Image 1 (cartoon, helix red, strand yellow):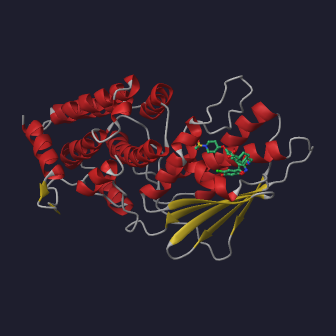
Image 2: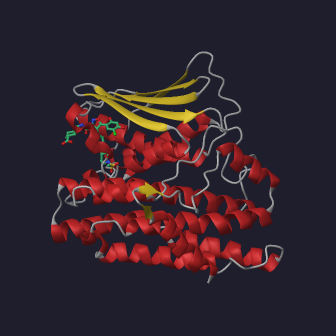
Image 3: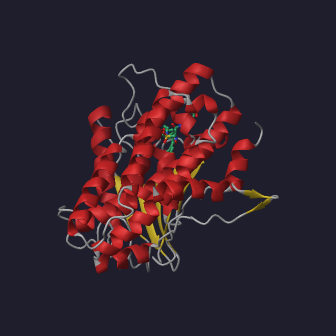
Length: 381
Ligand SMILES: CS(=O)(=O)N1CCC(Oc2ccc(-c3c(C(=O)NC[C@H]4CC[C@H](C(=O)O)CC4)noc3-c3cc(Cl)c(O)cc3O)cc2)CC1
């Protein structure tokens, strides 16, 4: 009952309007820095992790569940969106069932780990199912710029919320579950993340797809800027590889298509530079580039659904029809970094991945639902 009370009180706090003054909600998510997540994991206290997640996960779920309610009604009535909301409702209730349980009881901790794995599994296909819901809405009601903007705003916040919840849950599962981890890593965090290894892993994965479908793929040159000491960099290798895999796919697709009738493809180039604040990975290609006026489209969820591929079986699997670039930018922004595309039509494209060098500055970027948020959905109703 407590969690129900928390949720209704949270909603009341969140949406309370006091004579135009917005009351700071009592239950705000608590962003963690990479440094805090690392030291929390190094202490390896399952009880403390259970207690933190028991408080934090319902709050992060509640904030995004409340934001769902502001979505265009047309979208909310779609079967796939209703299915995603039912997953969130169920997962919220599952976590709240541990609210009053004893953190000193090892049986409770074991049950909690099972519940976490169930939640992670249940939400495995949220991205694809939401994409299906957007397509269902477009097919039923059509699409206009206003709805498209509101969906873009929501999905950026929805997927950032999902990234943050999965980060906390997979950390707990990796630290306290029976998963054998990479020897050096604390959960999914590497205190000495090898960026060049991440580049190599992502490049090989993208090249394999490219060669399988196009029978060829561009090679890669990797340069480390003078004076860049890449050691002791704390990060989540999986996030870097996810981002680089997407941008390598886009670069390879552009190069192969732009030079389709040539025997030799121009190489891709990676430059890695580490300064006092940023570790930057720049990927450059000679794939012909994107017109300036089209560059924003690359980050639009609707772009990857609007010009929907006529699946003739001819479509290159390098085509990022899975929200690759917008999601990659969210992963980069999650720990205060960014992903920037700079293209020269007629020549090629540079992509900059900015990552925070100082793990205590790499704070989670969390969407918080408040009256400002709700006004974003009311605008131009
Ligand atoms: C939302 S998503 O993540 O799912 N996803 C985003 C990605 C998109 O696929 C791609 C891939 C490559 C390119 C591309 C071209 C190119 O193709 N130019 C020629 C057309 C430029 C547009 C033009 C038009 O927009 O109509 C019609 C010609 N040139 O340079 C790049 C390029 C892009 C990125 Cl982002 C990069 O990192 C590196 C690159 O070299 C465009 C689109 C699927 C959807």
